[in-house]
Image (cartoon, rainbow, N blue to C red; front, top):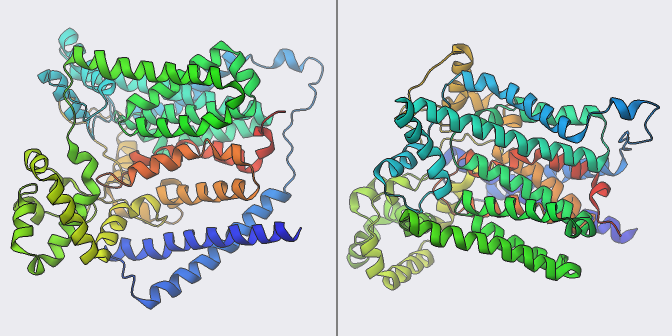
Length: 540
């Protein structure tokens, strides 16, 4: 009992320390674009927020321990089984409900939100110069369908609309499968199923991304199914490895995760390695599944790339963090820098790009990256980056923190682009060329437009409960630490996927909601793990 109390205290303290920093540090970064780690008042604020956070975590965890669960999975009344819908019918009904909930969002901006990288992907297809900068499969879909249907009908909107509806259907299927899995595991009453569907159907974030052509939507749907597959695997390995269908589905969702975003490859490789010891009883079959996944990826990135003449992406995409760190040093410490160091830096980053530095987005500096100069001066640049880091450590730390604060601070206003007109960059609500915007629901269009562009929309009371990636991350942290505290280690495995997604996003050019969409998609799954963890525990 004493050890249990100590363990609770330790985990509550750890939760308080982390969450206190998210609030105290994030608040200052969001307001001033810098965090003075030598300022004593910051640590007092951190301590205050940490204590409050620890108390809230303890309250939530005690509540989860004490609330009785009534799943409503007792024996059915006479004739009740006949009235229940079969799983396939229920699945299709749920898909239909979600599609219906998202239909107004689609009608508010026909043929769908064609933005972010969609124009660049379409341009690759039109010019016949496909690169690995964007996932090739998504380039062929989001960029290829508009081109194909333009050739057939003379309209780019038709192809964009076909892609949008296809994406809505596939996403609705992924969310429906997740809801059915959670309800089957927990034996939940219909009200819990309805709550999950209402969340997926009416969350403005999920509605907006359901009709947006960005690659992150289908990628996140695969990630979510990957999490579900891991829960199914760890919950009952006998059934999982004895069934052919489960193995095929596992390979499919893992492969989808690998190819729909470039960082998906690293997430999958880490997860496959982590899962191997868990599946040691069925290690031969697990190796077969891993082999299938790697074979498909090798086929995709090898022969398929060669057939399509896919060119490799730029190395600068992997260097966003060091580029921003060196640009920040240049911005604030230029007068004290050696002329030889500046000359070396200019070989890779032109002076005009360095002068365009913005603390929250790497694109203005990164867009001028000179690949030939980098290839010829790799060692020298590495030494320069290390030397500047040792000389200006707080500048490097602040560069990283301010570039990522919108991911983890619950009160952040997502405005990484820092638009000169004062607009935010929460969501890119528009139809870029070659599409043409058609609005059938103007009032709803105005609502989504304000939500996407106006900073005030994110600052309204309780708006963070729906919109803030940082708030969803804190809720994720509460569940993750609770399961860890309770020693439910197998249930932590699927939660590594959102953590790895965030880790790779932190190395990206800026903080956008679409990069961490998984925290929104997995929220009902988190709630189920928090309220009914025993339902997901491995069977003997």
